[in-house]
Image (cartoon, rainbow, N blue to C red; front, top):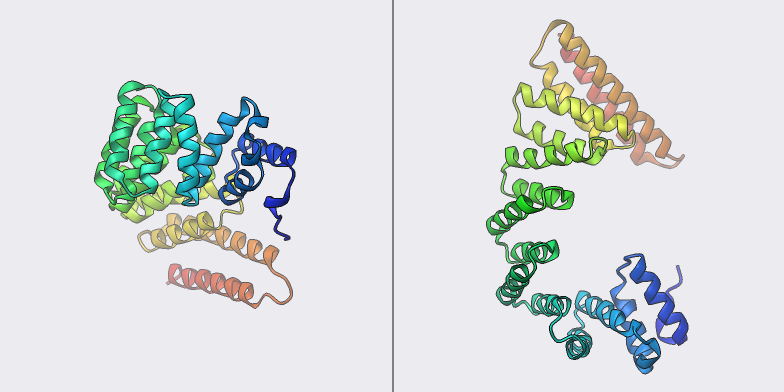
Length: 296
């Protein structure tokens, strides 16, 4: 795809492009800075009142691509116009983050939170800073406090589950994912991740639960390969722990998962795709081994 030269566009195109990215929440930091430096900064007064949101947009873009000089230019202009603005103070904290002054940034976010406890963004930025510092335990504590006030923030529950997984706190990670499933019971990704955690915890009850959630995830999203593999391996584990009719049910379910996996590989394959052929053979061999064990 041809790369556009953003330094040579006209003023109106540059303005409308930045507005489009801003409204659609598109992050294109390098291009945004280019448009500002080479196009819009030459006639800033022509932007009218839109100048201030452009300054904010370009400041964030500049921080994203480590252009601290451009970020400082935008921030100074905003500071003069809005000397007591919380949004400008948040930008200053983000600049401290970009400079590696994490403790100073946390101090600013704490100040902002004290001034406006109803704004969740300051607390979430603080969690991001703690993660960047490797302070995982403190980030977990901060997110737990945050969720006491903002219980319905699914993004925060997902982040907390990831932090717990990083600490091998699987039961606590499972609790976070249960909250997500309650909020969005038909989200295949949440179901599959919960099943992953339950399988990792081990034990018959947990693996049985994992099997059920892998199956549910696979039915909601038939292209979720991880869920299909998870379903197969859960059944494989359970086959070794059971006998009789229950074992037959697990083998039948593993057979279904095998068929679904093979169908997905065949749909993705083309005539020269030897790699996918190997995947199909591997899945078939896995099921053949399971069937052989179950009949022993």
